Image 1 (spheres, helix red, strand yellow):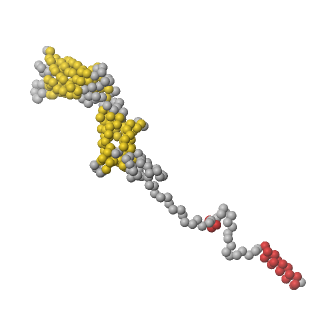
Image 2: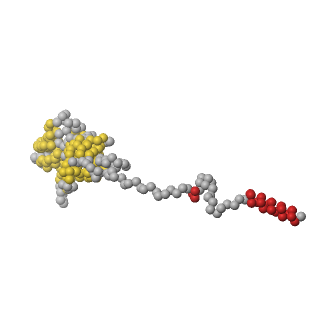
Image 3: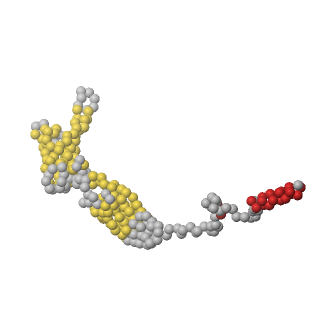
Length: 268
């Protein structure tokens, strides 16, 4: 009986040894669970070197002055350059349209090189306030990424109706009322009208105390003059023996031109 028990115990031990095989201490983990775990990743080695810094540089420059000359002409001056080469091109843009395109290839004393520009470009010349922007185009070195153009700035300019010029004045008096006769040179081809303002000081004498001086003014609307040439107008119903200041403006699209001014005294 003891032999039988010993035999059975031996068989069970042998069966246990078959079901549970020994695993070496340095065995590799199961690299397919999960997909795979980080321990099973291959050695990535050294990281790749960073890309070289971009060699294509944006241009630099400055719009130093601008002036609207009239007649739909704008004068611009400044400088522009690019480390990649040159000369660079400058664009004058308004209302999403390029009105001027030229090279910065004039000598600029302040920069000590041939990077300047001073030129006149066409520009919108309708009455009102307009905005333009100046850009410098990138001078590419044909690498990537491509550097951007440079905005030198955006500015506004006003187009006013042409002012009347050569204003002449004379005054006459009939009884107690005076007339100021005036004429001026019409410099506009499409004005809507002219605005004439006659200004003077009326003196009111009191029973006691100093006299009171009251500013007076009369405005006259003068019809437009077809084409150009001289315009003549008489301002009537004015007081006698009075010193008058006269202001004349061209009016177009609700905008007033710079004024033509003069003075005259009416006789007693």
